Each structure stands twice: as structure tokens, then as C-alpha cells.
Length: 331
Image (cartoon, rainbow, N blue to C red):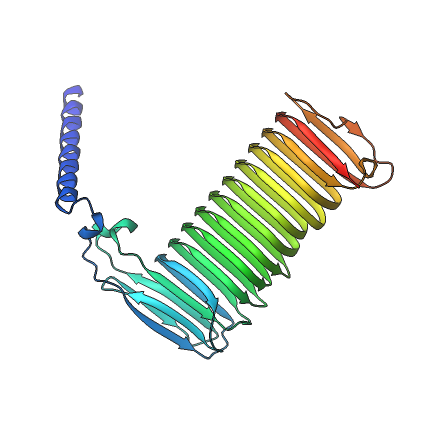
């Protein structure tokens, strides 16, 4: 039995070694420029346009950098690239415009670095009432100067997402590996950003219903946010939150990183928690407006462990495992 297992292991190791040698020789033959192994033809770009008032625009692709902006007229424009392995399927027969990629790459082109780079540009009239749903597996998404009365949803697994100067009903961003940035954005509903490995930045944003900013590993920076209920969370990275207005509740949690506050105006509750890192900064209103509960396991604390409010009905909870608490009150 042991002899048979040894033979099997030797055979597997030999096959693996031979495979690695073949790969190395192949890579060397093209000067280690792996894109030369691709049998893809260059992308040929074409334009699609439609005057229809679609209620939904949905784009789904594999590897592409998507840019969304303003149309020069009242039509929907899409500039897209195709080659011998990638063809787009357009469905615009009804109220929905759907664009999906039909990809037929051979097995040795399954990695994105073995493919040529591709872009897609979607241009919409300045004020366009439609649900916008864009999902790509590998590539960035950039949205600039767009106004819609409906929902915007942007998703990528590998690449940055950037939104600037958007007016919409709500905005949802989802990313696995890449940063998310939202600036100069006014929503009538909620903002929701989730990330696995990447930072989140929100500057000058209005989202009256609620705001959720969650990343597993990455920093979160907020400067200028008006939202009723705010939920901010990271496991690894700092959290800097400045100039929050019109908020009922603000919850910030962290596992490994510091929390910094400045110009925080909340009408009901502030909850701050970090396992390893300090909590510092300031909140608006006198200390007597807050019922305070605070604790640090290992570090200094300038707040009372408990203090009942005497002039207001707000609450402030600050909990630290390893780190200090230094919060002040600005009247």
C-alpha cells in the first residue's frame, strides 16, 4: 500500500514538474509577454444608439473598463469593442435595454492578463429616468455627471468604482478587490457600499434614507454626509468620519484600526466600537445632552464610564478593547 502511494506521489510530482517546465519554456518563447499567447484578434469598436426611453439599462460583462457619462443628445449611446472571441448580445425590443457578452475564449485565455484590454462607454441623456444596472467580473467602473430618478447599481469583482456628480433615487456599489469612491452625489433614498478588499470614500453625499459603508479590509473616509441612519464598518483599516448632518443614528465599528470623528451632528445615538485602535475626535452638542457609556480594556479614557443626560436625550457609547478614548464635545 505504501509502495503504491509512493509511486502515485512520484508520478504526480513528475507530471507537475514537466508541466511547469513546459509553461516556463512557453513563456520564455514569447519574451514572458503572456498576452502574445492569445489567439485573439484586436478589438473592433462600434457604436449603438437608440432614442427609446428605456425603463431599465442592464450591462453584464467579463473583462472591461466601463465609463458612464452624459450623451451629447437625447439618445442612448454605447461604444463597445468585439473580437473573434467576444460578441455582444443586444436586447432592446421591450422597455429594457440589455447588453451581455458572449465569450468563447479557449482554455489558455481564461486569465484576464492573456487578453487584450477592452473598454465600454455608455452615454445617457443628462436627465434619464431608468434603472441602471452594471456588472463586470474584471474591470473598473467610472460614472460621471448623470441624473436619474431611479436606482443605480454598479458591481465589479476586480477593479475600482468611481462615482462623481450623480443624482439618483438610490446607489448600490459592490466590489471584491478595488476601491469605491462616491463624491458630489445627491440621492433621494439610500446609499449602500460593500467591499471585501478595498477602501471606501464618500465626500459630499446626500442619502436621506440610510447609508451603509462596509468593507472587510480597507479604510473608510467620509467627509460631508447627510443621512438619517449611518452604518460604517471595517475589519482592517482606519475610519475617518467628518461633517455628518441630519443623522438620527451613527454606528461605527472596527476590528483592527482607529476611529476618528469631527463635526458629528446626530439627534439620537452614536455607537463606536473597535477591538484594536483608538477612538478620538469631537461630536456636536454639550456633554449633558448625552447619556454616556464608555469602556477601554487597555488604554486611557477621557469619558465617564457612565453618565446620564440632563439636558437632552441622545446617547453615546464608546467601547475599545486595546486603545484609548479621547472625545470632546463642541457647542
